Amino acid sequence: MSSPRCLAALSRYFGEGLLWVQASGGNISIKTGNDILIKPSGMRLRQITQKSGYLRLPIKRSKDNQFIFATKNCAVSRKPSIESGMHLLMPHPVVIHTHPIALNALLCSSLPDDAIFSIFNRSGICPVIVSYARPGVSLARRILKELPKAKGPADQSFKVLFLRNHGLVIAARDKKEAIKISRRIHNVLKRFFPRLPGKISGRGIRLRYLGDKLFKARLAASFGLKGLRRSDIERALSPDMAVFCGKGRLDMSGNEILIRAQSQREARFAAEVLAAQLKALSLMKAAGIRPKYLNHKEISGILSMREEKYRQDLLKN
Ligand SMILES: [Zn+2]
Image (cartoon, rainbow, N blue to C red):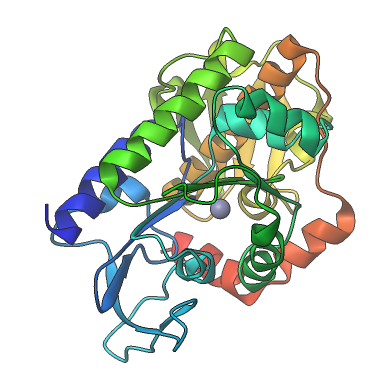
């Protein structure tokens, strides 16, 4: 299978519905001999096709073959994903970064790393659990520091990283292996959260424009709206929640959410990210675990990032 075809197939697989990614979150990359194929910032994963929707950047390897660098390509008009550094850190040909709702119900909770590790270890998955770091360069640096602590067989062809308050990275040899690992992770999550569905559709989110850059979002009850509290929408479990729904963009009117946004697309992205947070909170509640939100310092760190501002600007178009 050609690399663009493989990238498009994986993007369809992980980009379908909201289970693995929401809005423009997540990213998939494929390394060929001399290039890396990667999604640009601000785009939806499922928009990637064989022929369009991705960037091709030339790569160089360090002398010891330990690191891969993407070289600047003047022909590229859009910025590659802010997580490109993380994709380049992993030598594996296929790297998949997602924000799975159910996994984030564990990673954004107060459960300690050891408890999360043992839930998965019983099923033969040895995740490297990476403490929270701001997306982009800080996260890539944190991964570099924590990767050597990986437990499990050294000869494993794949690597699984669990990023606290953020999401998942699967680094694999090929598409087949990546999908196999993702299924194993989903099966473990399904055992932990018995009510977890196999798919979470975005169709359960309805938006209505009220005028004056204000949208009303109606979310299906399955997103866990029962007993919705203002703090559930005002605090952020993940960087995307801070970026898409922070700074007073959301308000509540009964069980309906009001979203202040520059465009329908921006409102839709905010509604998806919020729906994912509410679903994660409802899974935590059902399992009797407590959420651990990002603190003020972590949120202001995210909002001050140049890359995140760029991603926000793209949404306004
Ligand atoms: Zn991410």
